[in-house]
Length: 314
Image (tube, helix red, strand yellow):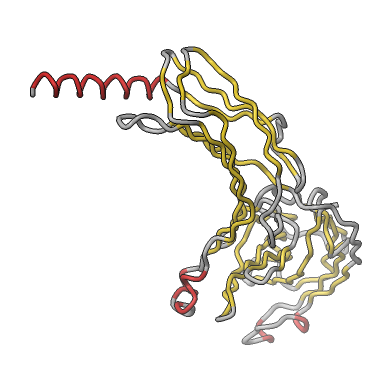
């Protein structure tokens, strides 16, 4: 019995050593890993080993899904449909790269090609990493081993971009003063000021900078700073109800200190990759974006003007 136990232990140790010596990687032909619906996702799976080994088959799977979740404040309000926020499967495709067999020591490359096509009744959305909505596409390769060995696997994310559109937006001019502000408890307590500005377009290309200008006409209180804030508005839900949450993506300081009056100050902001996507509206979720122009006074008062914008890819 002791001799049999020793043999089994030795066999397990040898298998574990082999597993530790096997490495796997997925290399895509496109260095930027960017694809669109209908493209062929191709590349090679690289397997390296210091010793020969046997395996129970090598498979490659493509998975694309939308993950939804509720914020902490919304869970209590919408417990009835909390469990209904299941991931939405957009893409599912499996491929057998190798049948069960043996591999010699060294490095081997296994080429693959998988079409990027959505499931029937679905469509592909652009890759997006949000707070309550997450759209992700992954390739996962797995090599199954024997009973005493752990499977070897490797996963990589690739980027999916939406189709291009040619929608054109209009300029948005605005004026901010105490009279135009909302949600004020005591309007008389706010120092008098006047601001004029212009957003060059309300329909913004995600690959181009957001631009505009702002001019401080007058202000009784000195200005501390002027900021430009990009906000995501994510909506999750179903027939039972919807939960809508706004969170900040980035905040850029446009001006610092008590700026000159009647001087045009440019607004300029780059949309961050992955954390923004073309504006989306579906039955189960929405991803929208807004821009806030924030003026901070030395008195501690915060003046905010909100502008909904639509992001597109063109």
